[in-house]
Length: 527
Image (cartoon, rainbow, N blue to C red):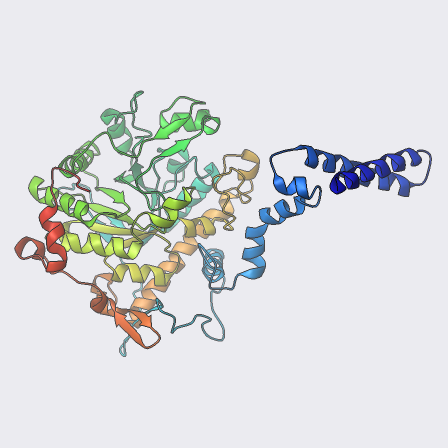
């Protein structure tokens, strides 16, 4: 009753003020303009039944919702330290911005990180450093079954679809890739004109929805796939099994977002909600997966073909290795997406708790292939929070041949980590289909930033490797990366993990791998 009385009194005072304001000074008008709306708002708060806070604290309760809305900005700009923000801390964001702009990325006065904190990792420098290579090395993608191999850069643009990203963002990313001579993964949203127009090298990714090569019923369309895969800018084709942000589930694109342009790119009806199922229709067993990869390679005219996954069951991946051996063929590359990855929206439980982080995923895939005697014909790409030269070198030590970056590339084109990717209200025009917001992203300015960021990051990685006494990424070894276990103990990756010898699984599997290897079945995905 007391709260109601206050609101009624405010309304009464407001009405009296409004009446008194007639023919009087501007101050009376100002009071009326302020008090009448407040009184009306308070009355509405008391009558509504949705928010308990507003019923108990009319008018004032709105301050709570306002502060909650701007909490991420307050956290990012005023509270978090340089090195403890998530998903990317300020130090990492700053180094990406500075490299993209071509400015200095130096740190004065030493590290701010606690180097005795458990989990801290460091690279091992050599007492005999090497000169930094003048030209960055490239990775030959293409096994014995590939007729048109491709030389991949050490760092490339990871999978981000048109639809998730704006047309201007795709144009800037591909323009940077074209200028810098590195690859751009299309994501599963189809092969759009924005991917093709700038002329950058493409890895065309096909997901469970088969967007861009699907029948009206949602099945894989081999004829359309072959036609588009023949495009000169498509250098590799990739089948997405799962992604780090949400492994094991599909996606939903609301009908309101399926405009004529997106409908054309994805081969779906305009205005209708599009569902990407969590599973593929083209295979149901490891053996069928390996056969379909071989079919994709054939349909593409012999271009490198592989798949992307967020690692879960080691036994299931070993089943795929057994299928490769049984079929006598293998993918040309495998992209390992870490559970910490993800540029778009995902259920919080999946983003936080499903899928192996990139370190464990890389080690699983790398040594499963080594142990099965397949590593020499399959290249491994690493995708998951690669933003600096250190990140890249660590992944090369852990078994990758090259790296892909998504969110770091978004930073390069202007992303500020507002984390509104799924709302269509991206403040920098990166992850939106709102033309007014997207126009803020100037392609002519941002494409060179993508090129500069990639170039500077690879140069940093080469400089780090040279300090470790290495000029070729293939010469990096597990003992060159160390992790602190506690304040008094640190171990190398060689000591922390069990490293297999080539073909060891075929001869005599070590005890830690034996059960999974014997249980792996090339004709079924066991749980």
